Image 1 (cartoon, rainbow, N blue to C red):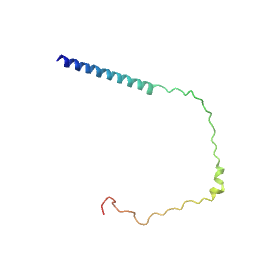
Image 2 (cartoon, one colour):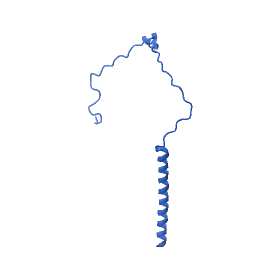
Image 3 (tube, rainbow, N blue to C red):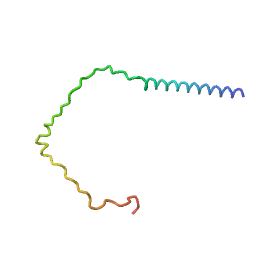
Image 4 (cartoon, rainbow, N blue to C red):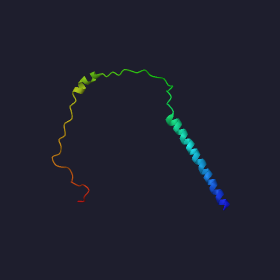
Length: 88
């Protein structure tokens, strides 16, 4: 009986160690991943550029020659069957 008791105690100690390691890793992940403030980037900073849009392109002859799409009229009859899953 003593052998079974020592084996069970050893399993519990290993389980406790594994739990402690997982707990410490979880705390470290939370501390360094969530609660730390992000550090500023050390790379070069680029100046802001002003965005200019040239609307003169819309006045070209090629664009004026384009025709709008023809409007598609709705169907006069109802397409398909009322319940398409019923067999014929």
